[in-house]
Image 1 (tube, helix red, strand yellow):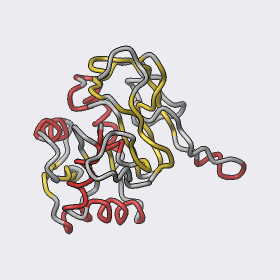
Image 2 (tube, rainbow, N blue to C red):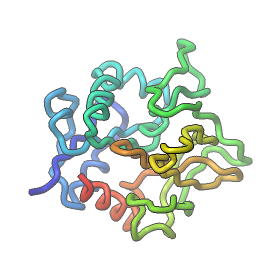
Image 3 (cartoon, one colour):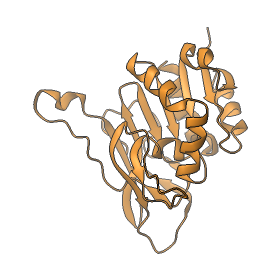
Image 4 (cartoon, rainbow, N blue to C red):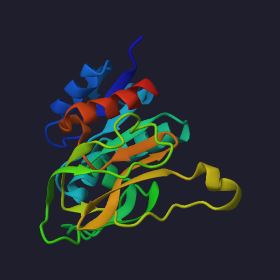
Length: 213
């Protein structure tokens, strides 16, 4: 039976490409913000384009923060893409009309403007895939498509001692300076790039995620 995936519909740009990409790798996909559908799905993809704070307002309007947290508390997989990854951090320094910088706070740290000569970072870049990655299995050396001006430049969740084996797998890329390109953290995964726009490599990454559900 095909994995059931919901693409969270909260007004964040054109998400049809994400729906089509997931369908092409064998998922049964629904674009919705219906609570029952979101919680019942095998996987939830959280898209995101544009302004961090506009995405947060859209998420709050459909009770997205609680839906995401409820899924994660039950070990139900969630995949954030682009700004859908950024909102998983504590906040962003991107200008906000109301001064509210807060994100979902699943991971510590702030999303900051890229320190680069040319911003936004737009185009194809390689990644340094994390050791033991499942998300990048078979595409560790491939290039992925990025369009962004902000990213997490630092990774702060690094458990030590007995919990070191549970440390998230963090994949990096570079645009003049390193930034976090993807994270695999138990049921919660995310990519700063757009897998649905990354050709065969992105399709394989989505297939890896769907087959893990």
